[in-house]
Length: 375
Image (tube, rainbow, N blue to C red; front, side, top):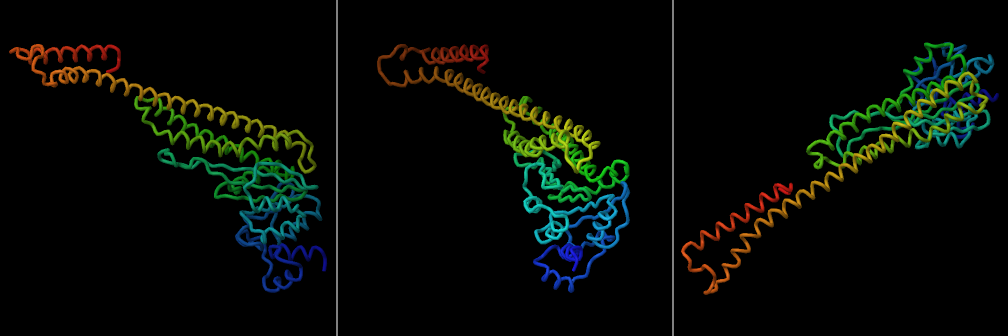
């Protein structure tokens, strides 16, 4: 049996086991036509599989192996295969067909990777962290602000494989936008890689703008009259969510720099200029995140200072009232000792005089504390 026949079986069955087992299962499970994108020979993880010739989408006929064979035979165009959270068994046939490196395949399946760019022979493997802003009516100490996902991209001379993880970051609208510009899409798989990078970085800028609105709201609350009573948990929560955003944005600088400056065989030289533009947008997002981090630190310090000032004011008020109360306490304590011979003890107006002295002393203390701002 030919190699193409073996690959066709492996691909149609998701790459389970050896060729003998594949052959046994193939008799139970017919091949599925890729012209029906809702159906897939690899299961529900396949989102779409499209062939492009000169930047124009072509009709899908046969299965994935047929599509790859047509592209390689014509030496023109490429195949774009989109997957969503594939399992190991579902991805095995794809890895065999496109000769993907096992380490890259492992990263694509397990996810939770840092943004990076790696080369395995003639194949480029890129990891992008996707982010989206979680809408909320009111920011609390437990509000989720930023949600992250991942997009892994395998780029070869005649194929693009995208593996998406997470509930957001769909590439359907991006695919439609690319198909509306055949000239750009005709530059090959690297045009798709650029479009994905640009799409991901644009989402970074969108999320940072939304996060800025939350920071402005917290800043307004902290510097209001009741700022000392503001919940500091919201500030810490924003810092945690900002850290999540930072983990997605900052490590992408080096991969984009490599794509923009270093010669890579599968990247069209005309596309490198576009990657420089994406790198500039990423730099703007990094600067915004760094500024937000500094601003949140300042807001937190201001809030702690306000709390300290409020506590000092409370202590001064307590001290002032304690001093005022000390006057009658002292006088009453003296006259409560029950000695027989005490000044003015038998005097008819002694009680009135003591009450008058106490009142005058307390009033004088109260006015003095009011002038000094303690009350």
